[in-house]
Length: 149
Picture 1: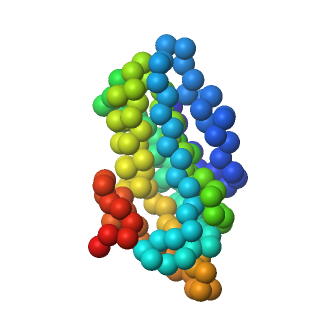
Picture 2: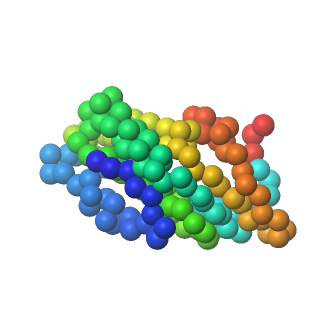
């Protein structure tokens, strides 16, 4: 049960294996991908900057909270830092539990809390050649759909 920041590509198979448990009948995996648009603008790549000491401390706390709130066996999260290209995985959350409901709930809790609480900043590189740091605090709210105002 851990949270880490990585400057290399996320190995999905290794992440899944890290939460494998023969007592579990459910595995829920969330992968956050780099997409080609945001707020009506064409995006070519993203850059993440992370304050690691605080992100790792708070991320570990979030995993512990999920374990205390939900009947899960294992949970982990990896968030990327650095320059990422379209379709790269920016974040992965894996949760295993005896039953699917707890795994889904814990996975949603972890990604929502990571997006709202961790010191991670995103710079969007647009097709127009402009690059801007984006405050995505409003994106962290559960239920937010990009493009809605």
